[in-house]
Length: 328
Image (cartoon, rainbow, N blue to C red; front, side):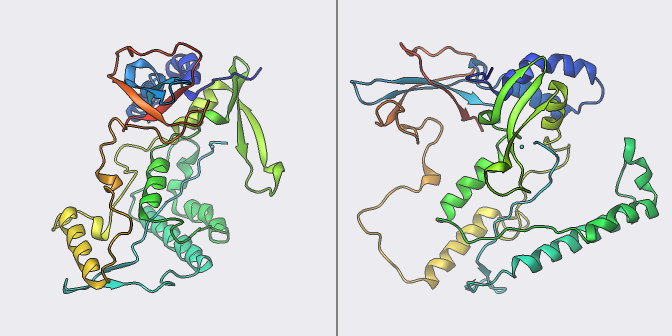
C-alpha cells in the first residue's frame, strides 16, 4: 500500500542501522555523515519555521522542518554556466560575445568525449588512477585501453541552451540542483521488508511509457543513494575565470566586470520604481513563502522560526502539510 508521506529519511531510519553494521569498514566517513544527516532530516533536530495563511478566515498553518541537504544508477555529469563575454587583456573594457559564440552541440559533444577520454589515458599512464575489487585488472595498460575502446564510439550528449529567463533564475535553478539529494521524496511509493519501490524515467523511451517503477532491496537502495556522495577531495562546484580566486579576489574581479559592463551599455533607468536585489535579501527567515496557501491561495507568512532541537510554539490546530526547507 502506498505510504502517504514516505520520505528518503524513513528508509534510512528503518534500514540504515542494519546496513551500516553489515558494511562496517566499507563506508566512507563522508557517506556516514550523509546518512546521519538524512536520518535527522526534516525533524526538530535541524530546526525550521512555522508559516500561517494571512487570510484570517483560513489561517492554515504548516510546520516546515529543515532538510539535510534517480533509477539512481551512477551517471556522472557536469553542469556549466559560461559567461557571455570577458574583460579585455589590458583590463580596460568588457568584450561581449556574439550570440552564437558556442559551437554546435554535436561538435561540442565529440570534443568533450575526446578531451575526457584523453585525460583518462594520460592519468592512467602517470599512475594517477587506482582500481579496486572487480576493476583491479584495469591497472594493466592494455586492459584499460580495451575498456575505453567502446567509449570512443559511444554517443556523448551535451545540452546547451540560452538562459530561459535571466541570470538570477539560472543561478536559482543550478543552486537547487547542486544541493538536492539523489532521489526526491515525491518519487517514493513504498518501503517495507520486501524492498523500496520508487518511480523513475527510462530516457530511452519516448512518451508515457517512459515512466516506470522499480523495487530495490533496502540495502541496495541505500548503496545506490550513497554512491552519489562525493569522495573526499572532490568539489561539487568549481569556479574559473571571473569567479576564480587566484591573485585578485573574486569580489574585486566581479566589481570591475560590472563597472566595465555598465560603461559599455546605455543607461536605461528602471520603470515603475526599484526593488532590492534578491541576492541581497535576508533569506534566513523569509517573510513569506514562495508557494501560496494550499487551501485558499493566499500568501503564507512566517510567524515563527525555531532552532535545532527546539519544539515550535505555534502548532497547527488541524491536519497540516509537513514540508522541508533547505538548511544550507
